[in-house]
Length: 178
Image 1 (tube, one colour):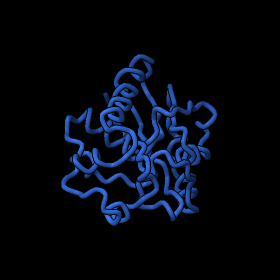
Image 2 (cartoon, rainbow, N blue to C red):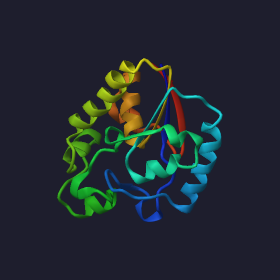
Image 3 (tube, rainbow, N blue to C red):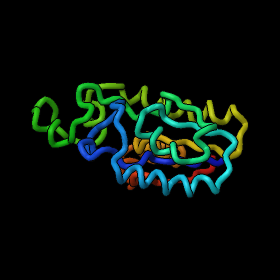
């Protein structure tokens, strides 16, 4: 099974560099241009199944593609919820002096919102149980950088910290065979 992963295009400037999680924010003007370019790349490819996060920034990233008419939107592809830290930048969270950064795993577990174990389980179940059960060969998934990195951590058997050090730009397209 081949999965084509797409990170949504650039978000509105006020949300760049933030823990956006489940915030339902749209794309910037640059993001819409990236989405149009992305559509050109995707429209030359064939997919047996197409899925997209149900959050606006992901939906807007696929809306210019001819594939949009066949896409299934799902909350299973949402970014991790950061609870009260949603929409905040790292420096703003630190400035609150409620939590301190010691290391990567301590930090992601200290932040509010969806427990990281549940987030990883959600991603694992979608990619390694649900998708294979479809018996499809070529699948498109439009989602968020965190989801892509958790998936890469699982299939490449690398730590979350290693996966989160992988650079994934807005609008990037990654193809993985599993």
